[in-house]
Image (tube, rainbow, N blue to C red; front, top):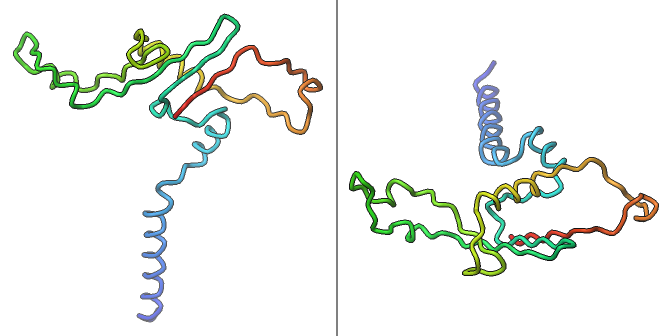
Length: 147
């Protein structure tokens, strides 16, 4: 093998490695693409700012208030004399019913509710068929998610 051939092969390898490093690393794997195709929505729960749910018993709207990092330093100290902000830096965002500064909602319950809605998977897809022929009735609930 001559030096010229070796240099050409080395350039091809470097080009391929560069392509993989800068382009392919951000692409989803085959498993991730299949999982994403099964889901009804491909929204991350951290992106949701407002969640509205209308059912027969009335509508409810949940609004997220982001916790700024500057708000975590309260100046309070624990029993060991450490700043509380240093020991609890992962305070979850706050959720309120209807509007920000409305009645507070339980963040754990909201996270569970969003998880159930966002992780819902498709079981089948009906195409080119009217709703009544497919056996579908008018919806009894509607959900609106703002990101």
